[in-house]
Length: 106
Image 1 (tube, helix red, strand yellow):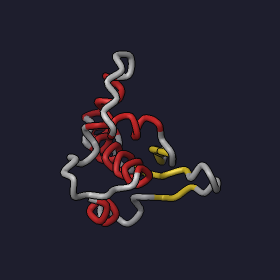
Image 2 (cartoon, helix red, strand yellow):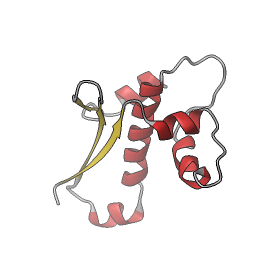
Image 3 (cartoon, helix red, strand yellow):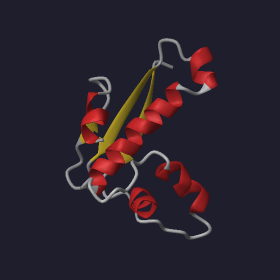
Image 4 (cartoon, rainbow, N blue to C red):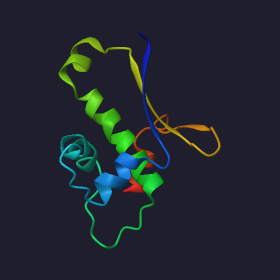
């Protein structure tokens, strides 16, 4: 395997639910994984839901890179973060420029 693609998408219901505090029991565990990747709500940040989806993808890329199996066996396997734009069909590559985008979004 040469690469792993972590792909999010615009208008993501999971990101919306995690951000707005959906407490539905069946979704709680799944949404907790998304919520921990999103910044704290402080009333100051005016992040769009699509930017939150980008942040989630980039954090998932970081999580994968920190996983023990990837650290042991992932040498030479590139992890690519991307966002699929539902309206246009565009696939936006997010992490080809290092951590710059994540720092800009946060």
